[in-house]
Length: 336
Image 1 (spheres, rainbow, N blue to C red):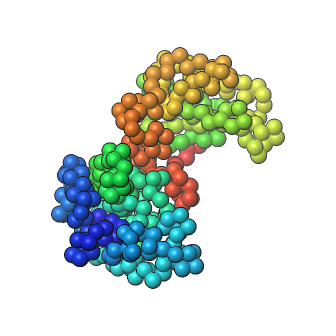
Image 2: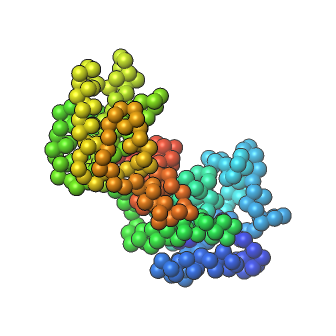
Image 3: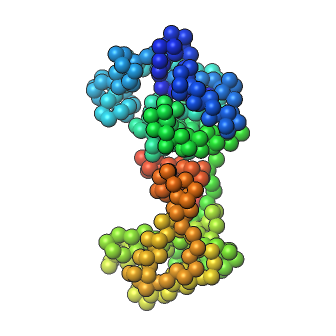
């Protein structure tokens, strides 16, 4: 099922058929590239009408008090007026009737209607759940082709999301990567993790978090399925130190130095920063660092964003971190 925003031109308004203009032509071409047949999709809009006096969704909006109850702003403190709530009811009836394997939400408006979120940039690229009458539908938000026509640099992003949509059509459920994350470890846990997972792995991913010119924690992941977080700062404890004694913390830092010096394929995101911080602040070298995922991505797609959240949306099936935070949605599996 493909959900757009509203009638975008006179032809769509007159014929009651979405995506007959330039954006529709672009959409059909991109779908062909990824192997999705447009004619096999059920295509509809959030609003089956054309905004007036101009073709701008803002014309359907008003103040918070005029908005549809329970819905956030559709755009910059502009709320879809309650008089258009029947359009949402009609959309939900269509979804229930069609029962789609995947709902492709094109643009901020269908994402607002189905996921109750404003904006599209921070959530696009990852399948998210839409609950309706006891049933959960899979929604993949991405850019509207009309946005691509206004900004051609969005084209490869939309194309990448459509590739993901093609894969998501194979199953109706939302499948997230399963990971085991070791948190709040003891020193004994560090040794067990090293022996059980790091020693046998040809590679190791390293990531640091910093605050007030110190490393607050450092993570190690020998594979995509398991990782370990080594904390150093705990503001709930006396002295703000996670470790009980100075001697224990020194021993942990020695272990961290050992891990950073392993002769493996050492990788990280924006890793030049991490390497520089470890060496400049702590005197810990990472002599066998081989790859920075941010730079690798930049070499492949120099026109795209390079932040970790964006890379996750392109290369993984993780949900948007910002969306997870707002929804208080926990996906990590923890292990003692």
